[in-house]
Length: 280
Image 1 (cartoon, rainbow, N blue to C red):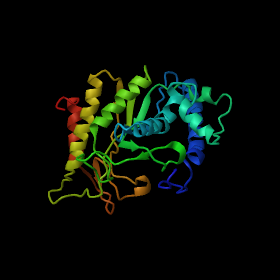
Image 2: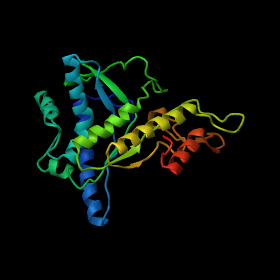
Image 3: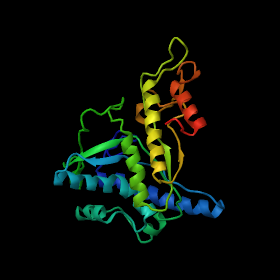
Image 4: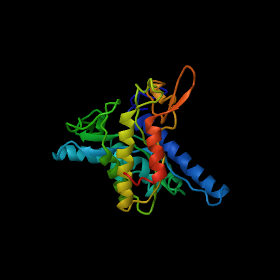
């Protein structure tokens, strides 16, 4: 929303329309969570936010500070009000107020946001290295260039399963006592097609699934309470700003005939489920 990539294609400062919208979404989440608990005995409520793994570009103090600000703005801002209580991260909120921003936080909002949520649910697609800069106005951080030699996908972002593992560990340490669930994780490819043998050989996605589910299994073995994993997505779909160009599915969709074909990644995922990841 802050860069105009997604609908409605408007552009605003980080702490204007974006944060005001998020504040009201979080209030709505709190109200909905209360309603679920009242109307559905034993109902379980989770979040579904995008969480990246962040790292400082290097050990220079200015880049380490930028990384800390980025985590406050991009991760803790969205989860602290729900799982820690007491509202937004104090340092990030102070930086906002010091620059004249007002998010319409009213008395009682903090209590409503911190209401009846059981599971830290998150989408994960990116690992990002952060450096000092002014792209994000007064926040003081930019997205830097990843280390050389890391594999990249068709989004030009790195394939870095260690980042997935690090997210699990960080969230388990910050939000103690809350189990986790992966609400989205997957790999887009614009080139998936049915070959002459009738199969879709999406080798990159097969390797991606093995690496990322393997990283999740390692986090499980290291004591993180993970209750579920949902791959994005079951079949090729209309994907936000990318439309039909990017294909995320385990099942290929012919856009002219609507014929569905299970991709190699679909069979790989089937084997992982059947074996409970025994071979990862």
